[in-house]
Image 1 (cartoon, rainbow, N blue to C red):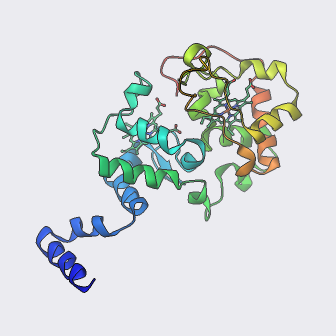
Image 2: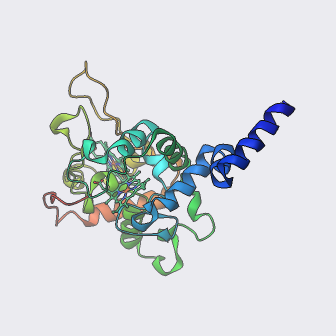
Length: 234
Ligand code: HEC
Ligand code: HEC
């Protein structure tokens, strides 16, 4: 044991401090460092810190599986050819650490500042709170702007997550609240092929009923507008 530690110290001295730190810290901590050093934060925010060009990633570990994250970081264009997210050609160690970090993110980045849709200035405006929630909790990352749909999924009819336009007409508010609270497992188009990688998460695990009520009010407010997906939506 003693010998081993001495060897590590020696290797550290030769290889330089930064390489040494990266070997000794936890994968999630290394992933956080990569998230900052690779410029992910220029486009993505974690909590209130970072860019707004891509989706806010505070709930990324809740809404997307590790397998999906790994696939996405290997090559975003293989999942969505027109995505503006660059392919970083990450090596296995970096990608694995980033996935470890991202998959721990289940809203705790807002622990101190409060979730943006719960800020006092939005109090009383359920539709506006719901809109902020839709965008910041990441409904938008699967359902696109205003729920227009068009985001890819594998082995589902049409190859896409459908537009939410129909739900405004088909379901009552309590039915919608239940769907959002309990999640949806999409039916596979081909029972013999691998299951769809993207499920609708069980938001009841991380959102309070009154938060789900607000996002439902936002969805219902979209009813008259609807509209088809645009190519550059995410
Ligand atoms: C030039 C801006 C840009 C940079 C830099 C960038 N991304 Fe993205 N990223 C996006 C956009 C835009 C999307 C949504 C695109 C889509 O779905 O087509 C996205 C999507 C994602 C998603 C999926 C989000 C979700 O909720 O489904 C993850 C995870 C992600 N990026 C992680 C990263 C990581 C990690 C890095 C750094 C290695 C990074 N991104 C760098 C723009 C960027
Ligand atoms: C990780 C991707 C993902 C995220 C994030 C997501 N959804 Fe979904 N959602 C889906 C999928 C997939 C379906 C099922 C679509 C299908 O096969 O009919 C779905 C279905 C739904 C449905 C029911 C549609 C129907 O016809 O039954 C509603 C309503 C809905 N989502 C609202 C939301 C809201 C509100 C949020 C944010 C709080 C959200 N979704 C976040 C992927 C997602």
